[in-house]
Image 1 (cartoon, rainbow, N blue to C red):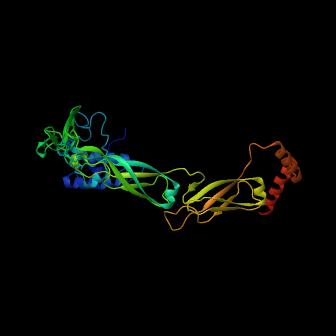
Image 2: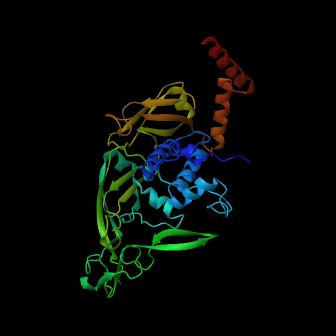
Image 3: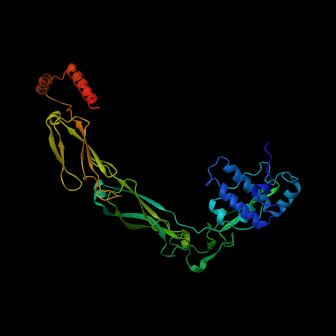
Length: 382
């Protein structure tokens, strides 16, 4: 079993150190070894060791017992049979938190932590738009049923202002203290009051319109802009347009609009670039051709297939893609050529194709020769 280090040694203070010196030493070491800031393998154990030392030395009674008996006081460890397991402390608590509250609750000490201001819930809306809207940039309008403060009671939840009284369960604090026996010790924790939901108030006569909740669902029109070139999954934030804080005590949440881009009949996108497959017949591959298709910029997209093209080759048409969201200009259109093979052909056409194959020498031996010639050509270009 590893022997515990002296608590004063752990904190790096003299045995005569006062409370101010102990707190200063603890904060300095806790900032250094907090697991969120220190990636060393032993940081978590060091942090727990520092917590344990401060938890004992900052308590007058426990410090006196430790000074007399060390790590083996009468009755066993003050942390119970399992020993000290550490507290989950936020990094900000080390800078600004009341350390007496953090450790005092374990030993049944007094003190009450600050009650955080309530905030309404955020709302997420997924909105489907076309690729055309992303190209142009558009103004969208949607109708939503959103939670809003009740107009009748102005969000208070009470029929009349005077019917709002102080909660008797928590005396207006919004929190209650719960004491639990843990072996020979008492664990004291602070929890949100269930009777008032943390508001600190009770309502004698609830509002008839909202049944005392202070909130109602209302249909609202929301207008927002789709930026040109917006990516699928882009989230727009509308501050304060989410749900209101309970009973109007705090700020409203935010409304997030997640843009989902609908599939296009022939385009896929890669950032600002547009990708498409173009089926081309064998004769057009050999002789070359020009194909025109409608395009999202309002002008025809002309694709020139060079003579002697092969299936799998790509063509690039510059500056005809989507607007770039990070720079000026537009992306490109990249066209993948695919050989179009008809599934049904007439008997006469089969005969014509047979004669064509014979004239081109595209039997098995001819195909093998073509593969070898292409391989020799590639080696010669290296």
